[in-house]
Length: 216
Image (cartoon, rainbow, N blue to C red; front, side):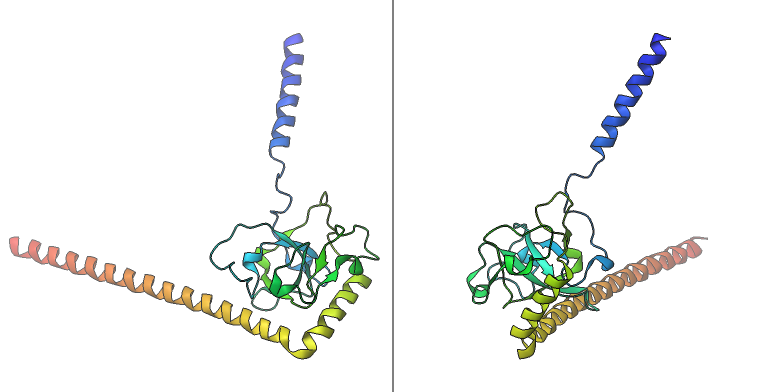
């Protein structure tokens, strides 16, 4: 009887340990789904994945993920227009930065004091490079719709009306097209190589059959 109780207790302890070890550790590693991407949604992204990129970011990656706020859904290439949030924006993005507190009046969670939104320099990030914000994060997961509308209005007022952002969108499309062409070229090369291997194997098999026929 005592042995069965000990075994039962041990099994409960082991099951609990396994469930804890299986829990996700990185709150930002979850894949972002299309329905989560909308105006005001908050994510994290590595600046190396910004389009256009920050100067000097093209040669390396793995930097600190910055909060970004989506300005709308992904386009047909998968790129999402976003505004970067930071305490220290790079020089080329700092000419039109507004306090993040201007855009979280109605939002339950607030951005950290002193952080700013680079509303004058929206960028694009591919949806696969966006990372979800966890429930335990100090960041809001989404802005209140009034705050989201105010942010989008200010960005559009400063940039979309001057056709700056469409140029960024064109850059993102060109970037996507370049990678698509690389993929097609690689696929073609792989197919050509496979065909050459097949032809070589076929020729070798034919030669072997020919030698076999003569020896008979």
